[in-house]
Structures are given as structure tokens and as C-alpha cells.
Length: 380
Image (cartoon, rainbow, N blue to C red; front, side, top):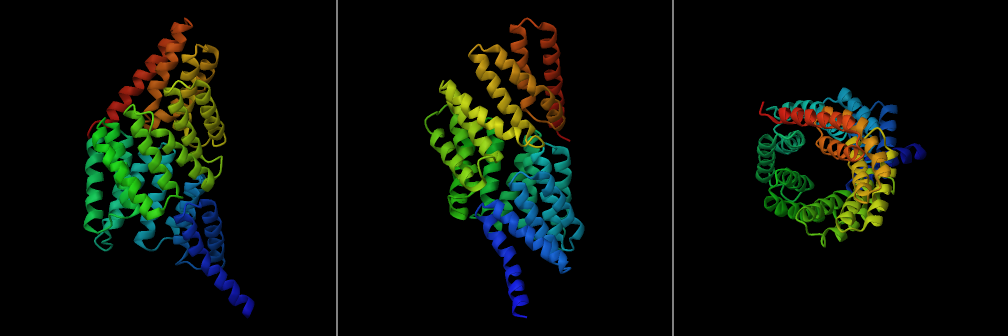
């Protein structure tokens, strides 16, 4: 009897341990705790707890880049869900997975389903509504629907403000995402105070050893870079890299993003060998995750190709450009923005090699992609 009681007590602490690990950015540990809790709940037929545990497990897996496993568990949670909040969490999670995969149309549908539930009069939870609108607004941003995105972000921020939740992780996320929208629209003066506020909010809410704080550092550094201020970003990028390596391990996609950022900064400062080292390390990590992050892999391939092109090493440049094309074909179906630029750069190389017919084919492809992207951005 004592042993059984001990097992029950230990099992009951797993969700709390998982939540604590997740909140501190220790996603591998969180996954382990939630996985064990799910198995125990299934064995005991604890139907009421199962959707929450499955959503939490999926959140941990999504943070680790295990998108297929995360989507599977979100859908299990959706099937088992009884409460509206559990269904919202599941649909939002699935939308986040599709966003990471570049499937923006599917993600928009997922977030819309979540928002319909969140706005139900029976629920009356402004926090759920704000977070769901945030997800939908971010998809609008990625699709190039600037006005729709800005309106939705402002609506979500107003909801959090009225609910007195301005010092939360979610409030920082909304400031960050609205800043990203302004950056994409070239309104850097509007973006800087929002990014600075997001970093400060995340530092107070999560501490300095958390991936979301590292993300804020990266975003602020990227803004300085766009302003041609090459002195400030380096320390911010390196601090973010250290956080991600300590919390998530050396092969996580966030680490690859940090390395790509450092490579871009080094290239801008004409530190060519240093830049090539960063880009190569980033590409090696992304090659270990071929099923996700296609647009990010295109960015790194393009960076390496441009680096070698600038050094007149055309054979190496062509090697990396040629790897981009099949990835861009898939990515652009979902409205990615890197594809046309990368293709046009490849065409430059082909022209220098006097392969004019292939260069023309590539340029035509890029032009069609730009037209398709512009049509998507038109108001519906």
C-alpha cells in the first residue's frame, strides 16, 4: 500500500515538473515529464487530464522541432478534448506546427477554428481570444497582408491591456510580433521601442536563461543590423547562441538560426572566413532536420552561395544555389518570400557562366512567384 501511494504521489508531480521545465526553457526535460504523465493518464483512463497533458507534451515537442510528433499529439488532444479551452489550445498548436512548416493557408484555417471557439459567449476568456488573434495576425504578416495583420495585432494588444496582462510572456510576444510586422513594412522607428519592450518584458517574466528571451535578443540585434549598426548586434547574437546551446543542445534549429545570424553579421563586416564557418555550421544542423525549416535552409544556402560568389568562387556558389531550387519550389507554394530573391541571384551566376537559357528560365520562375505572392496579399 505504501509503494502504491508513493507511485501515485510521484506520478502526480510529473505535470508540475513538466510545466516548470517548460517555463524555464528546458524542453527536453519537459517532454520527458509530460510523456510519462500521458502514459500514466492513459493507463488510469484519466480522461479529464489527458487533453491538457497531450497539449503540453505537444508544446514541448514543437519547441524542440519535433513537428510531426507535436502535430500527432495536438490532434489526439483535440479528439479527447471536452472543454473549449482544450480545443483552442489544440487548434492553436496545430496552427503553430503548420506555420513552422510554411503551410500558411492551413495555419490560417487552424487559427480561425480556434478563434471561433475562443469568441464563444460561453467561454468569455479575453486572454484566449488575444492569443488566438495573435496567431492569426502573424499568419497575415507572413502572407503579406499588412493591414489585416496590424489591425489584428492591435486588437490583441488592447485585449491584454484591458485584462491587466501587460507584464506577461504573451504581452511580450504581441509586442515582438507587431514589431516584426513594422520591420517588414520598413517602419523601423516603430519597431525599435516595441522590440526593446518585448525583451524587457520577457526578461522580467521568464528570466535570462530562457529561449524566448534569447529570441528577443536576436530580434533586437537584427533590427540594429537593418539600421546598418554593425557594432551592437554581435554581443546580442552571441548571448542568444549561448542560451540556446545551453538549454536546447548544439543541434537545435534555434542554434542554426543564431549561427546564420552571426554569419550574416560577419559577412557584412567582410570577415569572409568567419562568415563561411558560421553558415556551414548552420547548414549542417539544418541538414539534420530535412523535414522542417525549408525556407530557413534556403536562406543559409543562399548566404553561402552569395559569399562564394562575392569571392569569385563560382563553382562553390553554383553548388549551393543548385540545392535551393527544389526547396524553393515547395516553399513558395505557401507564400514564402525568400524564393524569388534567391532564384534571381542564381540567375546572375548563370549569366556570368553564359548559361543564358537556364538563367532566363530561373528569372521567369522568380517573376511568377512574385506575382503569385502579390496576388495573395490583395485584400480579400
